Length: 418
Image 1 (spheres, rainbow, N blue to C red):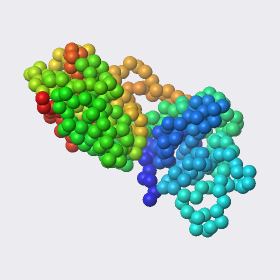
Image 2: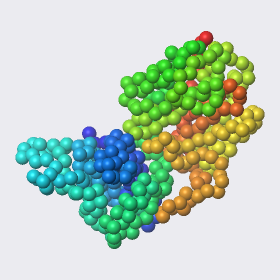
Image 3: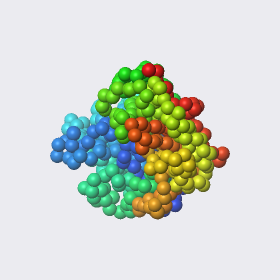
Image 4: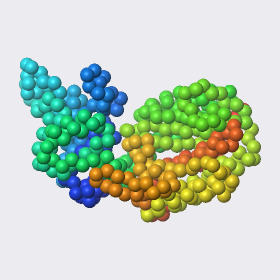
C-alpha cells in the first residue's frame, strides 16, 4: 500500500513559483518526510561520525527533490532503500561499491526477486552528492534555480554541494519550507488528530492511577506503556515539582492539597502532539478553582479568534488579556503550530517587528492565520507560590474560529483522591 502524501502541493507550488525557483531540495528528516513520506530512525538519531570517525558530526546524507509536475526524487544510503517500498518516489542511492559487482548492491538472477518491491535499485553512486547530481540531471535541473535547505548542513557540506553543481543557482530555502508546512493537509490533520487521541487516552489512564503519595515517575511509565500499545512513540510527560518550573526526570510524590502542572505528548507517524492539564490533589481551595476557571475562559475566548487573517500576535494578546483581567500578571500564555516538529510556524507570541528571511522569502514573523493551520494554545500559571497550573489544547483554524482537534473535556481539572 502506497503511503499517503503529506505534501500540500498547491501551497508548495505557489511558494516555489513566487520565489522564482525551479525546484526545492530538503535534507532535514522532517522535510524529507514531508516531501516524500520517507522516514527512518537512523536519520534522526545517528551522526556521520558514528559510521566513519573521520567524518564530522552531521546528519546522514538524505535529500528530497521536488520539482513542479514531477514525482519526488529521494537520495539516500543504499542500505536504507528497502525502507522506501511503500513510497511513490524515484530513488537514487549512494554507498561503497562491491568490488566483485560494481554495478549493483546485490545480484539476483531470479525474475521474481528482481521485480520485488523491496529490491534495491541497480544504479548506485559512490557519494551522496553524485547521487543528488544524477537525480537533478534526470529531471533537467543541473542548471536550474534550486531552493536548498541549507540550515542543517555544515559549511563543508554546503561547499561540496556548490562544487558538485557549478552551473546551478543555489539559494537558501530553509525558512521557505517552514512557510509551506504551516497549513496542514487533511492527511496531516488526521494524523495529528489520531496522535492526540492516543496521548489523551494514555494520559487519562495514568491519571486513574494517581493518588496522594503516588510518584510522578510511575504515572510516566503508565503513559509510556499506553501510547506504545496504541502505536505511538513517547515524547514527554512533564510536571512541576513544588510549582517550580518544569521537570521530567526527578521522582516526585504527590502531596495532599497540591496543584500540579501536567504536560504530555507523543509522536504518531512522526507528527508531534502537545497537551496539558492541571492536577488537583485531595482538598483544594476556592482560589485554586477560580484560577483554573480563568484558564478555561482564556482558551474558550481565544479559540473563537482562530480565524483566517487574524495576526498571530493578536491571538496571544487575547490570551494575555484574559489573564490580566483576572489579575494573573507576569504569566506568559501563548501558542504555536504543530506538525513534523514539536513546534511548527506560526508561533503565537507578541510582535517585536522581527522578520523571517532566507534567500527565497522575507516576511514579517507576525503571520496572519490561514484556514487549515493546527494551533496549540498553552495557558500555564507559575507565579503562585508552591503551585503551578496548566491548560493546553489544539485547534484547527476555520472561518468560524478554532475547532478542537479532539472532543476532550476542558471543564474541570484532573482530580486526585487523598
